[in-house]
Amino acid sequence: MRLKQNLTLGILIIVLISGILTINMLNILSFSKEENPEFGREIKVNNQQLNIKEDSALEIIWDVSGSMWGEIDNKNKITIAKEILEDICGELSTNVHLGLRIFGSKNNKGNSFLVLKPAPNNNQHLLSYLAKVTPAGKSPIGVNLLLAKNDLIKFQGKKHILLITDGKDTGKMMPTKIIKKLKQAKIKTHIVHVGEINKINQLQLKTLAQLGNGKYFTYFEYQEVVPTINLE
Image (tube, rainbow, N blue to C red; front, side, top):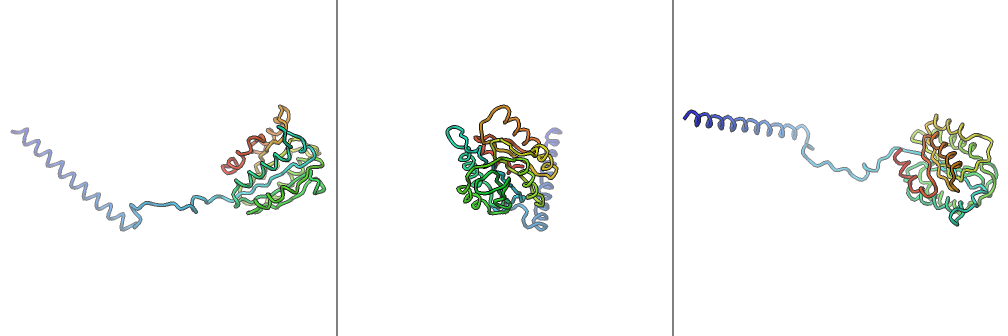
């Protein structure tokens, strides 16, 4: 008899506690809805919110010196470089401040020529320029890196340089010293190696990219360039 009474009392206590918890939960939900009308509603993120990115700048330094007439896999290095640039311009957001500096072109005298100042919506302008380029002349890499630094130095967002070259340097200015200055200016230097790849020239270009806090790519890895820059 006593056991039956204890069981009945236990059930009554459980029912009472459940009722109190239910009332408290209803009060909490009611209060939350009054304080915040959006409580309990699904929050949707529109495409505009998802596409917000920090401003960034990319200046491409393109080696169009005479050595770019050389061939890889039965194709001129200059043709391969143009294909790489076409792909980059197609993949790169038009919001990026895109610039182009070249050296060695038959069309422009001197050690360096700024074709496009870094600015948004330059992708199509760069593509239109590709057909006009004829390789010739020397390839001073160091001075072009320094001039690219000056082009980007006042930009407030993320800054990148992409050097597209076969690695032959005819300049008097040591690229390693300039790369260190770029790093101090918070400019990352990436390199696409368009040329015959051997232990010596690959090590040289890899070292430059590492010193510049950037990435080294071979010409057949060029599709990794834009995703890499987007993540940094």
